Image (tube, rainbow, N blue to C red; front, side, top):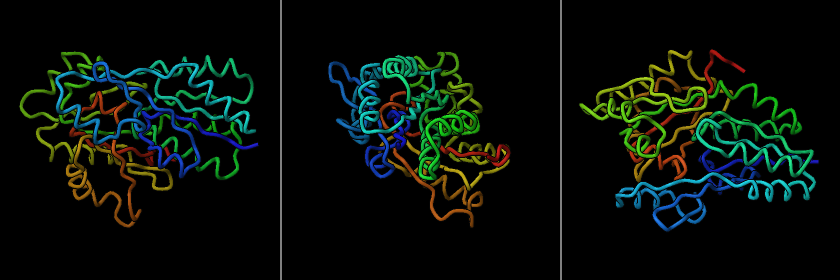
Length: 286
């Protein structure tokens, strides 16, 4: 009996990467007006950001239905696999409820985990689950281990604006206003499964410095565990600048850091111009 890992597209694991890892990514849906798309399937990241920039209408995202999860679960069970389903944080989405309903319908062999993460911190938890599966660890043990480490997964991000978070209902107007004046770049993390504004920097350079300082404050990076960089929008120029500024953090430790384009599920709320780094801190070494 094998293990099938099932996740959703808010992890920013592309369909191509999913095929490489042998896992399944269920796309969330994003709507521009009357047009509905499947994140990373029927709309590319580039097309999404072009539409986001060109339109005055903020897109809407919708959670995955119990029926969609049930289809994916039954497909895996019929293939003789058990399932580890890692779900976007219940603090920002109702997908967990849908996955649990589907798991109850399918019976034994389904292990659902609320990651309490999204975006690339969800990505690195998924990669860790893949590593465990490839070591021959069974589904129940993988789910238990992800439960154990999920709060150690750390995301630090510099946003260009908080406007999209505010308009998408993921942040109060007051908090968004605090980051909208004087070219302030808000520094974002995830705390208790929701967005947390942990600092403000004047300009992108100071924002990059705050990313570095946050990593150092947490005790540095555990390079034995997965890590990832991500960016929103049409260009990775800001991310390249961050890599130059933070070279001392990883020099001699790793040849390359995986870089992903953040898709529609999270880009709807981040907007263009954000960069992010996800890692496991040394202080919480696993």
